[in-house]
Amino acid sequence: MKTRALLATVLVTGLSALAGTTIQDKKGSNTLTIHADQGRLTIAPEIYGHFAEHLGRCIYDGIWVGPESDIPNIRGYRKDIVEALKALNIPVLRWPGGCFADEYHWKEGIGPREQRAKMVNTHWGMVVEDNSFGTHEFLDLCELLGTEAYIAGNVGSGSIEEMQDWIEYMTFDGDSEMANLRRKNGRDKPWRVRYFGIGNENWGCGGNMTPEYYADLYKRYQTYVRNYSGNRVVKVACGPGDWNTRWMDVVLGRAARQIDAISLHYYVFSGSWGNKGDAIEFNEGEWFGLMKKTLDSDELLRRQIEVMDKHDPRKRIGLFFDEWGTWWNPAPGSNPGFLVQQNTLRDALSAGIYLNTFNTHCERVRMANIAQTVNVLQAMVHTRGKDMFLTPTYYVFEMYKGHQGATLLPHELSYNAYEYNGQKLPSLNVSASKAQNGTVTITLCNLDPNTEAPLECTLKGMDAKTVGARVLTAEAMNAHNTFEKPDAVKPSVFSAVSIEKGKLITTLPPMSVVVLEVK
Ligand code: AHR
Image 1 (tube, rainbow, N blue to C red):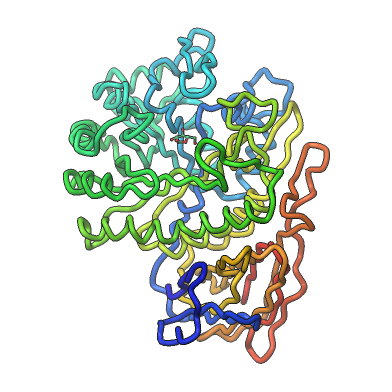
Image 2 (tube, rainbow, N blue to C red):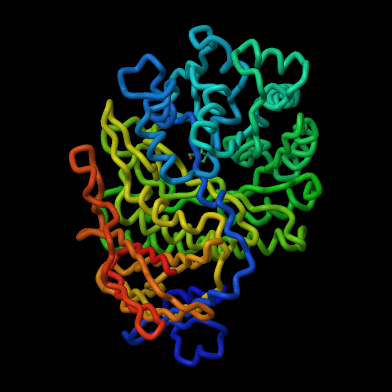
């Protein structure tokens, strides 16, 4: 892609020699050129994936209420959540962690629920985990949602035999101890398990390992993750957190041949790890800080992909951005180990930028999983008893659905700067794709909370006849939905767009996410 984020104080006069984009220093109009006839890369649907950990109220009292609950449910899964997730076409769901994965022993989560062993969830609030949601409950949920399963295995505190047994239990169709145990527990046919992670954050909560040690362990563990009965597992190595390119370099240097995909985690906030900032009470400086940090995901990807290219120039290995999103200080009054946070228009803009960035790098980024699905971090859904509300971030996923499986279209963008306190960011962030039926989806974020963005868009190689548009915006940067006002922030039809002489002419409201569907 030719879009380049020329950050901050870079003055841009004379930059026309650069291929593609310039920031205009004076306020003028923004222009976008999309090459509708030039795409060659597919945006993997899995980029729009999700992550559900045994953490706080994500699984229990979130997705899973149990079949006896008086909350409407389908065999124990909250009906409203199932419907909301189905509406997103979620392509893949990662489970059971996160940090939880490396202390999870799957055999404790099978058999009659009331007889399952209890454990302490030491990472997340030291609460007692009763294992009532286990392998059967997870894989049945994936079938119910029509989504691929992505299981994170236990390297930190689990054995190789345990990992081997798990794969056999889930996927072997023949006559073996594990397959027969599965049958005894009520499931005759194996499930499909497409993705299997060999550990999680093994540089931290997953065992505090060095990359050298992990790479050797990876090679041992993955050997026994077998392909049974036609099930072909994509094996995912634990990759780096944030900017740690050394971890990427060492793990790929030692184990690239055995790796199908490698993960990357990057969370954004506007303060520091120790004080990330409040989810709702923030000023424009904190808004700006989050936009900047989110835009940095582009540079992060460039650096990590550069290392991948060194070891895997033919781009066989996928980069799975399997944890991403905003992370704020815990909501007042909540258990700090439960990672409860509200979700505002600011989170929605951040999600829009992230997803545009993943699309841009789809040649390498073949999966991404937002953290996390329900009630935790940048959730899609919040629940309280029988009530629930969808978050602004949920609506971004809903608006971006057209990109799933579509062909990425190259573009050039020329944008005004968003200036705050002497610093500059690009005010616009964009992605475009073409679906098999020819529909072009364009997703646009106007990061500037004060200024609308007039935009002229040329579609090369396409005769645009109709355009449908929706917008997600609000009056305040911190607008959010609550149980009392669940519809405060939701998309609406966007009429400020027209086709004039083949060009799309529009003006994006300040702090907005817009989707255009062009035919
Ligand atoms: O998503 C919350 C936690 O963040 C995950 O458990 C861990 O992998 C990461 O540090």
